[in-house]
Image (cartoon, rainbow, N blue to C red; front, side, top):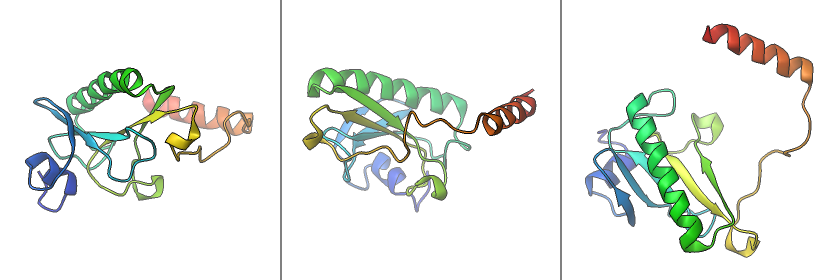
Length: 142
């Protein structure tokens, strides 16, 4: 745990939260700045800064917990979909530097949410650039 980390404080019970679920590895709680009705966070109990830093077992546990909670949120809240969101790094909108997944129920009734896509899905990119970056990443992974 990090003494300066707000999420570590929540996991330890030193800071308040509305707990949704907990197991040996993960802790899920409601987001106090929700993008939609039912927006919550799932974090590993063990501190890790971000997606690049998290241990594979903790990442798997957080992802599986988020999936279980998302399924329940769809049924319980009547959500029409769910976004799982992770922000890794300040330039990717990360503001709390403890890995976390946002579970954001989405609704056809937009009065129940305030989330908008930050880009335009369906607008094609430059295929030469896409191919070059894909080949570069594939080569680096080999």
